[in-house]
Length: 342
Image 1 (tube, helix red, strand yellow):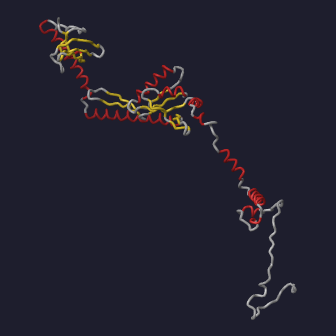
Image 2 (cartoon, helix red, strand yellow; image 1 turned 45 degrees about the vertical axis):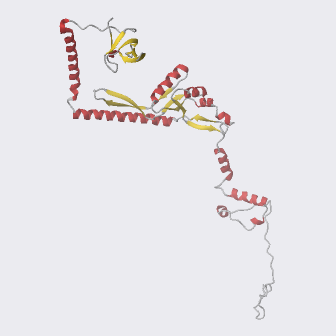
């Protein structure tokens, strides 16, 4: 062992150390292409750290070493992760963009609820029109039209109760049917309909508004909300009636007394008219087109004219007056005119 050691001590005359000119070559062994690396369990758990030998390996050797490191980690499998990503990737539903524009494909989903845009003011009337037209034009189609509304009750001054529907979703009517292109185009042409609620599909060449169905959960929530709102309005109306009875208890019997007094007054009037003079009043002459009539009240009171036409349903009469040498037709109520005796 003493032969391999070199004894030295610094020389005061030399500035450089005696072994500065000695160069020791370092050799780093290369990993063979087919050699298998043995990795311990402790090294497998540790994250891979770049070693100085990786920079001297070829691309093929680095790829093989990377694959060995991946396989050594039992908790991570990159192949399974790639397969899961490919499975989760959504597939194209249609082969071409023109198939997506075909509205006949909507019939494949079966009967669904669709939202039709209508006028906010005449929504209930439009829903009735849609139902009547579908019954007449498509008698074989099963459909259901639903316009959610709350029936509000209000008591008027004369004692009667008025019922007025208040739409829950103004401007929307729900239609349940098997929708296709023919039915879609027919409903869009109905007066007062603005189309279906949906989304635009297509590309820059052609785009259409494709209807989107409403899920069953959303429809159940709508039915539930309409029922709850109706119960609230009914309860509020009953509370108002109870409060009115407490404030004015004499109003309960006033209606009956008013009706009885009005009947008695009518009977007395009839008896007085029949008994005065012992004779009944003569009946007025019937209104016959072509006869001369006189206006009793209104703007043309005192004028005489020629009766042109009488509408028994609306109780309107068309009378012609000669004003400034020209005949002018005026529509008056039947009670405002009387036929003159010939």
